[in-house]
Image 1: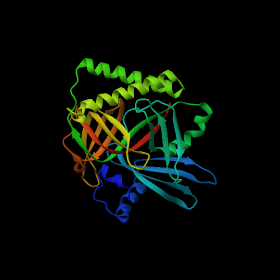
Image 2: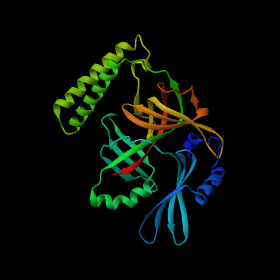
Image 3: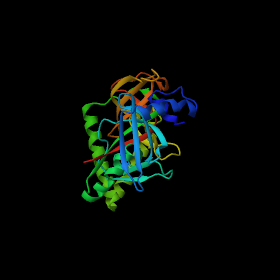
Length: 291
């Protein structure tokens, strides 16, 4: 049973046989589908069914002369904005039935690894992309198993402007360091030491969440799971049409990255409002866009 089904409103499902009803619904009454032709008269197919606006279930499998053979399924949330335009790599995962995307974004400081939602579309367009060398971007989203709402950190216009300049400069230094610039590496090292000293000093008098306003860092043993804290830019409460469970869909700004996140209302502590912050654990997904 996929543990993040609760994020889109299926929290009452406890056993795999209970899921078969919904998987059959997806197969017989899908909202959309993608097919990528393979070898030996087979094809790889994904079928999507929406159970709330921009979220639902995907089943994946192979299609041959004997019919459709399901390999896996997963819940999804469609992101609304391009998250990163950095260079992307897509690779098949060890399980052989799913794909992962990887990119190095200077705003985060670590490699972003996400579960690829549109693997059939990617396989279909991969050959054309190799021929024409088209630029790929990624639209990321996250399914959360639970989180809390925090009050915002008050900043004036001068502080906001200074933070944007600092973020842009750090991104520039990270890109330079990746290309072997020794001066950039030294600048980043000194900056990290100064930051550590500043935080250590302020922690005696202030709460950590008033010092750190957003973060994005790996969490747990799975490479596509993260703990985040981001500013809420927009939110809406939607209802799963199959279970009538309410889900919050939020658009966040986290480390200068735009990200859509959904969480079951029963798993969220606090009331979301624009300007407040969401902190929680997410399973990071993404869709590759071909320009």
